[in-house]
Length: 351
Image 1: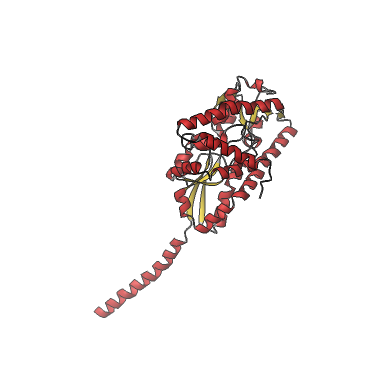
Image 2: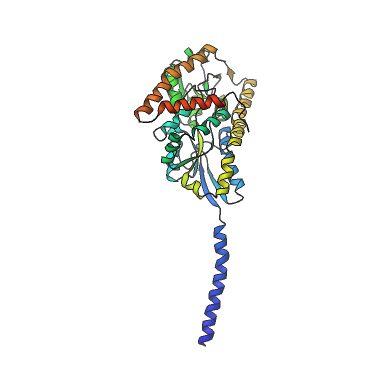
């Protein structure tokens, strides 16, 4: 009996061991789940352009990575996304340095107004180059954040509800949604900047608490500003430097072969994002003009030159001074940013 009992126990143990093996195998094949966060809804061109590289990473992982998407501030508000990414509350997020300028001060250079024409793909290429600068890389490293993909956009202009802006002088006293250094430039030109989240602007214009806002066509028409504004003055304020970022600890969990595939997609992502965002915005604007929803007033060469002059003399200089006070190499970063923009703008940068 003792022998039979011992034999039975051994058999039972072997059965349980054999059952455990498939379970362990199944556990090792579970996908890595990463949380993605954005302040935008998924359907706007901005979101579609930026999320492409995230979706492509998921697709090319062949089931090894699963992305959970949290849109429209559903995981964390826009102005807390850097904190959330740093702490791992989100693994991947759309980042706008101007929302939390104290967190990544050097990268606010990418939203310095009138530094370039602001076309999306060349600016994205310039941003990728800037990310290789040791001082900028150190800023991201300190936050446990890594650049994942492009999200810059093309130049902002002025959208208004009632007053048609024909010259820079018409900006005086207008309450317009603007953030970061765009707000500083608007103030220097006589306008009244108001800081609001992207999703709050429509209602503010509709209620009359805003006269309009600064945006490019894809941004403005993606948020249906054609329903609450009538006029567009495409003066070149420049774009806002933004990017897709990933928590470095989360990145380290991604298999090396997928890391290589994603990194190799950077240049392709620039071109695709440009086509979706800037190209899509141009189509929306043409449609709005054809339907007589929006009237476009082209700025004079004199006004275009004046915007850059004011930006250079006041906004750029102030930015460098602020960085110097923080002990950061402001002029060095500005010079490198202008060099990279000059390198890529006016060239065929699609891959």
